[in-house]
Length: 347
Image (cartoon, rainbow, N blue to C red; front, side):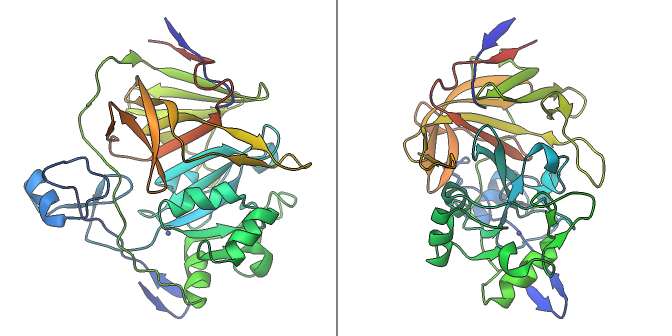
């Protein structure tokens, strides 16, 4: 048995309907894993046909479509679980807010869920993470720093503070602030009504069907502990070829479907955290890079991570490591003590 330790671990708009068509142009023929290429011709040469894929999942799309990603801040307080719509996100960042409670920055582009939430307030680094995808930003409240950033046009945004009870709906089965929800369509309606352009060519993430790294360790299970108070467990499911997630030993599911959350790529990375006020709010350094672990198909890889045009991506020997097709979750943990603590890997 191998042990590692890791501590602390959205056009056309008519009436009330928004119909969104989104798509991807593919990768560069000279470097098939270039995450910033947008050449459909090159991708077609590589695949041998004219198929298109979603830029943030690498999965096949029905047609070439262009919709701007939608980033939503989702609550992860115990009273907010289970959440709605997380399974439909292409990319999810999990990062500490105050104390040992995390929040999610869920990036939607290939799917448009009818219910997302509970939506919670933003921090400055949430905006930075969303900006890596040039995403619309959806929040319900903000820290002083996040308010200043959004009011100074750091991102095109929609806030529940301005649309509570209209675009944002409160659920009667939970108490505030754990009961604010929005649909993808309502979010887009609110954003386009503010004059924001929803049509957008999205830079693709790097994908590859086959494994590209050597020196693997089996990783049927990975446990992450945040500040000795909050645990996340990822367990590999051989049948689906993806990871199942549990929080504090309770399986994570989608509230509406009751189906488990499944994940294709998991990147666990360390970054410097610093408390900045009496409420315990933090600043997180997301530009310097550092150590990380990448989980794919039941294997674990020692990697580094870099901030490449705002996206936190796995890197090995100076080259970006491609993801396997599917969704990606990124757990950001404090660099002290970092990714060298508390993950037990079982064969």
